[in-house]
Length: 98
Image (tube, rainbow, N blue to C red; front, side):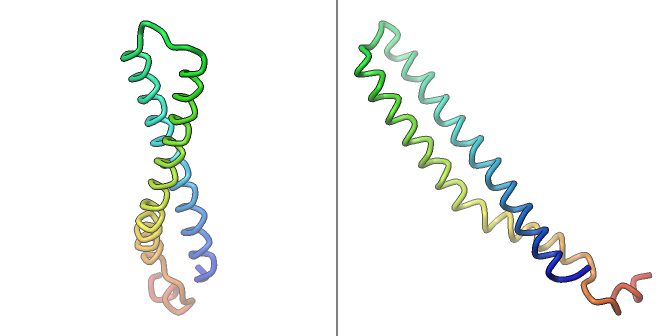
């Protein structure tokens, strides 16, 4: 397998894993915050208060998503690079493996 192909596989796979994981964590943070707000303020809020809480929840979950992506991308890249290093790159190595 060519080195370029291995690098492309690592890049695309780590981007997909990072995007999926960080988006799910951000959604869980947003839904958890919304559930907490609904539980604490069960007697009702005004429309203005709900808009403020919605904006804060959205920005907070977006921040959690970005912070998670920042942390996970290098880890996923390292793990996938270790996996792809198992496959030989040189044609001579392929002949020796057979």
